[in-house]
Length: 360
Image (cartoon, rainbow, N blue to C red; front, side, top):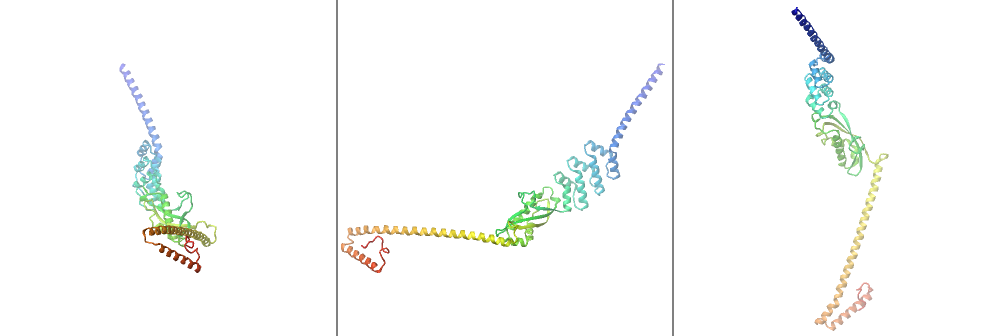
């Protein structure tokens, strides 16, 4: 009797344990079913596209906090474009590094279709460097035009370049630069601002080396050619295809019908002012020279007066030394009086004679 009770209790316990195990299995199965249902849509989409993304990959992406939808869609796009070398792990690595996976996939597809040699690792490096790799590829296929100066550039908001030819005439010019991206130099290469600044400098230098403004207006293409030959794209992320002068004019005569006449009138006015200044300069120099000569004459007269003042002293010394007698002195006085009389008769007057001698 006791044995039967034990058997009944053990069988009841076995049945209860079985129900518990079955319940746990049902719960686990339900959880697995929910997980599979959550990833089933993406897995089926990847499977039908032959993208090679399994359920385990999707679960691992969820655990690594990777957006599975972005990875799967990008992988499908790459596979359909014929790019089978890029793996799901490559896309996940770039996503975890903070990169823009859709941009990378679109750029790789565009480069592949355009027959542009673009390595996936280099594309990832360009994207992580902050450059827009998709825009770079699009610019390589479809070159873009950059205005010089730009509306938001470093030229203080000026819409045209201001340059002066050798004849002093100011010219206003605007250029357009056609560029395409040089993917090899995209990492570390200078941006559009550098291209704009170099182009403006080259155009201003080319205009400044021109002999006259007429030569620039007659052949603006020569200015653009000089600018293009100066190596504007060295060290930049672009390859310059052409530099074109979009607009060029003479400063200050935008409302004039006859620009040549206006410039000639301004030149004549400038020449008149210059000649007047030179005449004033020569007159001032002449007055200064006259004053210098007058001072020299007065200086020489002073020297004569000093020399004549020494004559009486010399005569007194001659008397004391016996070199001059009284008769010699009188003969000298007679000669002096005779000379004064001859001058008076000749009409010279005393004014032209010695001013210190008053007839003896």
